[in-house]
Length: 282
Image 1: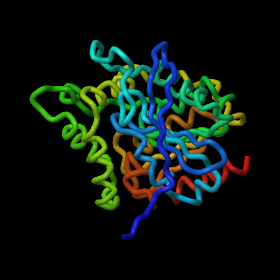
Image 2: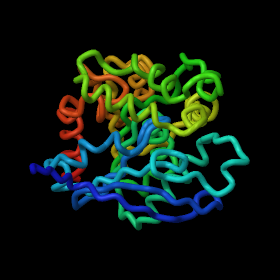
Image 3: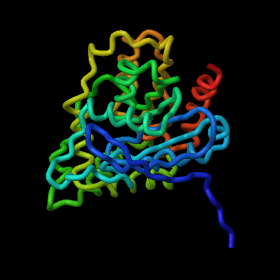
């Protein structure tokens, strides 16, 4: 029998977020500089499994991807059945900081995609002294909504299939089918109302236009990577955002869409490795 064991190890950590005890699942691989990975809306940390299996990354970085509460293998906080899940900017920042502090991470780098890319900008604004560097993938200070969230939590439709259908067009046409299908499968598995709750942050509570003054990229480098096929966060959105942040470094990634680390990991590798090289040289 031929068996291939991946280097990824999964664990649970219990800690308080916004005054509520949360049991949070995370996976990690590698040693060195902590690199915290934030998944996209309605998904989970599996999106980063290819980075966690890349020895050119894990030889220098301790890559850590956690499932936010309500997502993946993480549980909602106690009493979840009596509330509607809504992710706010304040809750998102507190979740990220609580996770990093719970694991006692020393000057971690952080990468986030989509909603994770948006919160990277807020982290750069509020907590640049805590992070070694920040990487925003598909990140911008604002995008006009192009989707109807009323379809995302209904009793007469399959919410997971609707989520996958909604985001399927954001995958670049060059992405290998096996990775495209894997990316969409994660969306099909989301909990009821979770994708819609994440998009509350994206649609309602995270307009950062005019609110990013004072980001010090000389203290905490900021890298913005956006796929050329992303029509949710377009290259123009990212370039507009970067124009207001002195020192922000922008790359438009060819043949990639909204989920580069999972939809086409080999293509994304060519863009993220130089960034990780630069961070390691700091």
